[in-house]
Length: 224
Length: 224
DNA sequence: ATTATCTATAGATCTATAGATAATGC
DNA sequence: ATTATCTATAGATCTATAGATAATGC
Image (cartoon, rainbow over all chains, first blue to last red; front, side, top):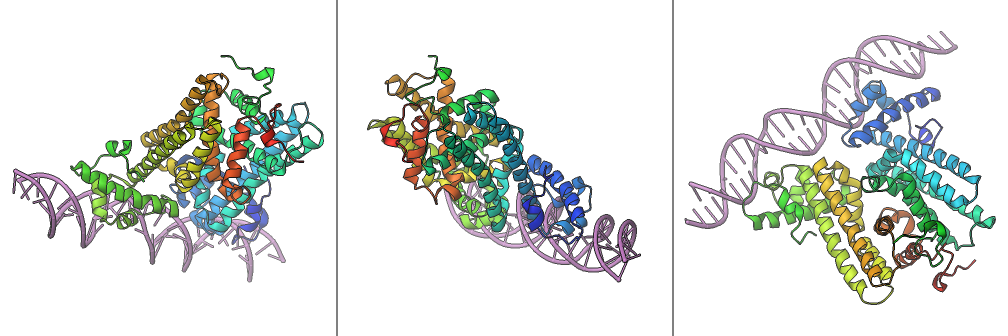
């Protein structure tokens, strides 16, 4: 989590001067906080618990952040950095092979599956952030969707997808993003009824218009 | 909110005997709490604020609920009752006219639009509930989806939709549900770029396989 | 001499209840 | 006599900081 330099590191002020130290300590803090937040939620986790789990004193914690909300922001930021890395990598994997769009969706949803708890955390606790930070988090959220948008553009440019209105592409990109999240926030229902691969295949069929679309592919022919 | 008798009313214990009184007071409590929770979130709302906004003393509040979490459960329950009513009514409206599936989706998403803040609240605060109540809330959540599932079955029975595998129908029902929710939790992005009707039309096209499906309908022919 | 770290705690809340009072119905 | 309601507060936390101490680098 948060191995790469991310926005948060730069914008959250610290009393400590040494940047290397800031990175190292904040990594400890974020790692500790992520687990606690996932387990108990932001509000039920105390700053003392975070400090203890991070292996530092409560006093020191406040040299690296100015408030508990700072910790939450750092956590959200680290999660997004990891998501962005995961998705970028996933799309690279998907780039070889044909039926690229399907491969992209598959790799992406697999990333969501791995990061289930983290995605859920962002959904549930973003609202606890002060305005200016919530906005930053939402910007990061869009960035993932934009990765899909430009991937769609590539596919269209290379003739693998038909030309589409910009707004259509944009909405498809959001739908794909949300289908990944949905696997996490409806997990309690879906996971006991669909395997991950089955979920991926079926949702892909829907995006590709193979389910109710007039021209149905063989691959998804329905049994009665 | 919560005008109808709902589950919560029956399962949350109260010190007060008179059932009519319980209903009336809890209505006050829920109405007050809904607004506070939407505005400040569950954890940042105090029981005193709830009591004050409901026009009763803090002591009396605790005659009608045993804990702050009880209030949250009552709130979630009332929201679901309202959703269920809204959706059932919406589907009735959609039943006349043809292209029923599209009409259903439209009416449903319009309900979501009206109940935006409430839907968001359930998403964000469900986790604060104790286990047995979170489970109840999730059961209610499924109930909305099941309404779509049986509506889909009706359409298939009357030949307005092709026969579909059960799992396909189930997933479509969930997707429709989530597309409604998505309009609320991605509002910060979507609402400034799509009108409600535009969003509805485009998502309907995706569900119906009119966008990337091989047989594209005239209605959604794309401009370059 | 400066920077990083820790201990101890001030000060502010907040939930939930005990015990007193008012309203109701027989 | 019972039920509903209110006032006052016990008891438990929790965030954030002040002030003391240890480590570091010139």
